[in-house]
Image (tube, rainbow, N blue to C red; front, side):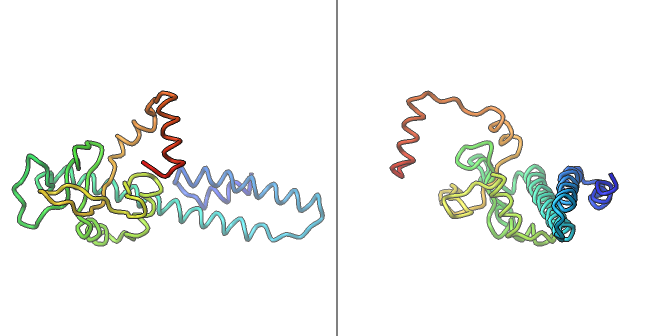
Length: 196
């Protein structure tokens, strides 16, 4: 219990870190018991503390990525007229921030790359780290290896950062599309031959 308390104190009020603390404390106890049972001298405590420290840093990054996503969603909500859409063709004085519902997809919003990057940098976010996490979390729509996708903007097709709105992503993940066995077989054959 003393070991768990130490990790919990280090985790603070972060709920995800507290769950990690329980896991790391269990590993700590297991290593301690193994060391005693086998009569070995293993510097497990140093390694477990380092793992926990790195885990805390990653959780902090993930929280920042979530905050950054929320920031951009609130920017879109508060400045709709700064986003191009088929019904809004009057470009604002400072230029477009992005595209609402790119190519008719309501679960997406596209941002002009330099506008998104400068918005994040102004608030001291590490842009590369945020983009990596968004990609991993499927909040950033990608085009193959390219982090930007081609999107229609007033007759052109520039590459923009395309973000998924989190509420739509949750719905899709909770209710996967049902497909027939024929569609599944065809999809598998397409993946096998490299067609799409």
